[in-house]
Amino acid sequence: MPHGAPADQPELASARRGRGDLAPQGADRRTDRGQRVVLVAARSAVALHRLLDALPVFEGDPRVVTRFTLVPGSRFDTEALAALDRAGARTVPWEEARRGTHDLVLAASPKGELRTLSGPRALLPHGAGFNKSLREEGSAALPSGLDPHFLMSGDVPWADLYALAHDADADRLTRHCPSVGPRAAVVGDPTLDRLLVSVPHREAYRDALGTGPRRLVVLASTWGPESLLERRPDLPGELLARHPHDTYRFALVLHPNAYSETGTFDLARHLAPALSAGLLLPDPYEEWAALLVAADAVVTDHGSTALYAAALGRPVVSAYDGDEELVPDSPMARLLASVPRLAGPDGLEEALRLAGSVDTRAAAGAAFAPQGRGRALERLRRELYRLLDLTPPGYAPRSRPFRCPAPPRTDLPETHAVRAEVTGDQVVLVRFPPETREPVHHLAAEYRAGGERAPQSAAVVWRRAYADGDRDGARGAYGTQSGYGAQGAHGARGAYGARTAWTAGGWTAHALDEFPGCRTAAAILSADRCLLRHHRAGPLLVHVEPQRSGGRVARPDPVAVVSAVHAWLGATPEPRLPAVLSCAIGPVTVRVRVDAARAADLDAHEL
Image 1 (cartoon, rainbow, N blue to C red):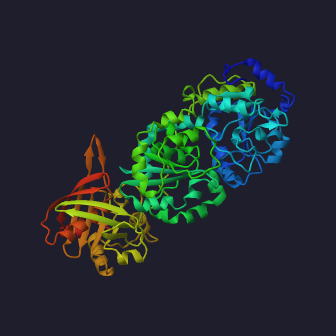
Image 2: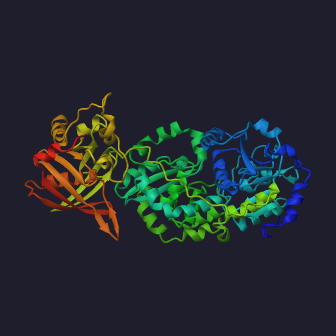
Image 3: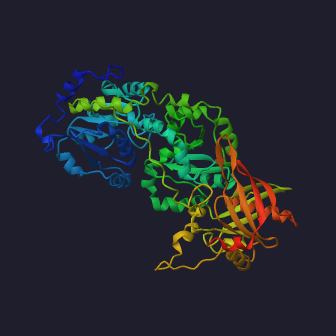
């Protein structure tokens, strides 16, 4: 069908059913209940994810059943197999799929022996914009998704439907592969539609990620030799080391092929320093998209993830260093040409400032047709039901928001290098990972979770307390569970529920004696209260008044407040109590009241 033709031409269905290269319609393609069988053929995890985003076209229709098969021949099939298992899909072995007959075959990659599967075949793209040319595969300089080498079986197109996101994609397809052009249909992008309906959940995503008032910057890395992580493997750690922990939160969104190629174990090992400094590493299915919705900006290579971010209006910064894979004048090439480039980690703030003035939605318009937004499932369903020879259900298919991310798999950083500037009762505090080269004032380490060495050399040692009725006391300022804070709640219980515990007053006194470099020991009682013991000023009770502005409440990490009070005490030889400090920590400025602790305060909380 010409891509500009109406989407409901009935003669197309009968013409396709009569094609000699398709298996005939017959009872052997039906289940015992006469249902149509749709075979979902996935070659990689990313292809499977794209197909899962499209499958709601069949929701609620008992006339259709789905089966899944893994198309062999890809070096990324390990992750695809795991993704199939996570999806709870009913699978059939490839050889069985080849022998069987199907009412419809759905794929999102043109590679592999898909042409050997019987039944009408529909091909969806597994990215946005057809931006890459892989020199070792197919035709040189042609986008692999538009390459006749993969789209043709001899002189005949092997698929009956090529579902595309934009009219420009159909024009490029016709130009590169004229025989396939008449079978193209512009339906939109189901993944983009899921992103758009997820936007109202942005705050929930940020809360789940523990972002708080910080600026969330997502690094997007595709796979292969020109990917961000291959060309700049140290960039995540360098950004974390140079930018304040309380101002920025960084995340790394990796292409599923990167997980397959390297393995989750080795990825975690390679990224261990950045992960321990607070880098978020989301799951490659669903969570990556929630990260884009939650993000304040995206730093990217030439992978199409950034086009989705641009469609959401997120500022985009280029970190692409390649020179071969990016297709000239593709949507991604146009986007990268319109945004600032990050030359090195020190240039992030300026790059973000410049990126804020670029209308990324306009750049994304080359990849996503405005008229197709929000209607991709509806348009795709018409095309697929035509191939199934079924009347579509009377209700509209619905795009579902991406699920809320799981709490970060890494705890809050356990050790911070802290820079503090004290002017009277005003404290400006900046925290970095301990490996930073930035000038700092002191080291703050979490007791036990920071390991043996860090507390020995830290001026501030802290731990989280748990008090009956105050379960939030074991949580960090951004709602993220942290290491031994949770131990106070349950982990220290004996076999029969019996336990012994330090009081906050007892442990702070013990910590000053145990660690020779410690000058302040603190028990974090809640997001708003801390009990600390200073080597000279004695036990103190600290109350934090959250910042309130525009109907919103923002709280800094109470561990940062402890460091601010420690710095103030060091600069104030004879503090007058009670005292009220103004503490600027990242984007949040709060009032902090410091009182002498009463005897009852010392024993009121257990650790």
